[in-house]
Every structure is written in structure tokens, then in C-alpha cells.
Length: 176
Ligand SMILES: [Zn+2]
Ligand SMILES: [Zn+2]
Image (cartoon, rainbow, N blue to C red; front, side, top):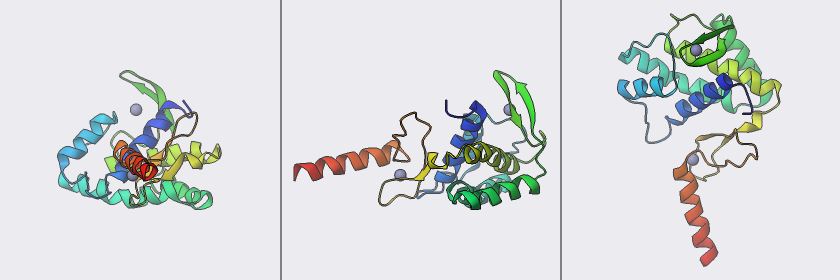
């Protein structure tokens, strides 16, 4: 583990959310948001309605900016997000999850929770000067984000699809 478990979980969720906007968009239905909520073990408000879905979809652009900007710009975006939503970090534990940080109240809307949790995770990334853990997919036609939390920093592709496609292309190129 490179960062604390909640930091890594928040980064994984944020990258998946941003990448859902890549063509074909995989966050167009409330059921897909419900699956995302469950998969990432979110707690708190999740009303499941179309307005919530629209707000989470809209969040993807600003999250992408926060995750891909240069360090100094990212700092501005992180600080703005934390101030805008009046984040107050506190340690909590619930269910099977050991102590971790919540920075918004339980009744905060889901998009606010996601934005603040991403900003909190970026605090760790930025002050450890580990921004290179985030990059753009090495596939020439893909703009997906890559989160590399591996020890040897070997991840170059956003998905196994992109990885396999490029492995096949490289193989064909070698055989020519
Ligand atoms: Zn929690
Ligand atoms: Zn990709």
C-alpha cells in the first residue's frame, strides 16, 4: 500500500468515475450509479434519482481537472473544493472498515462527498509528491486516467482492454 487505505479507495473511485465518461459513457443510468456506490462501499446519502445521477455525471469534468492538472493547479482546485464544501475531517469507523477520514457530514449529497473525498486523497498525493501516480492512458486513442499504486509503477493503460489491444498491436508490429 502506497497511501492510507481510504486515500487509495477514494482515488480508485474518482478515476473510475472520470473514466466512465470515456466513449461509450458507462454512467448513463441510475442503476449504474447504484452499482458504483456499492462497489466503492460508499456510505451516507444516495437517493438514486435522476438529479443525483446528473450531478455526479457533471462532477466528472472537475474531478478530471483535479486529477490531471499540474501540481500547483491541482493544489488550487483541491483547496477550493475543501473550502466550498466546508470540509471538516474527522476519524470514523463503521461496519468492517477501520478508522478512516470522513470530511463531510453523513447527510451531504453524494456528489459533494465524492468531490471532497477526492480532494482529501489528493492532499496525500500532492504532499508526498506522488502526482506521477496519475497519468493518461498510453493508448494513442484513449484519454482514460491511469492510477498506478503498484510498487514498480508498471501501469500504463487505463484498462485491460487498452492493455490487451496494445499488446496485440506490438506483437503484430514485431512480426512484420
Ligand atoms: Zn466511511
Ligand atoms: Zn485506455
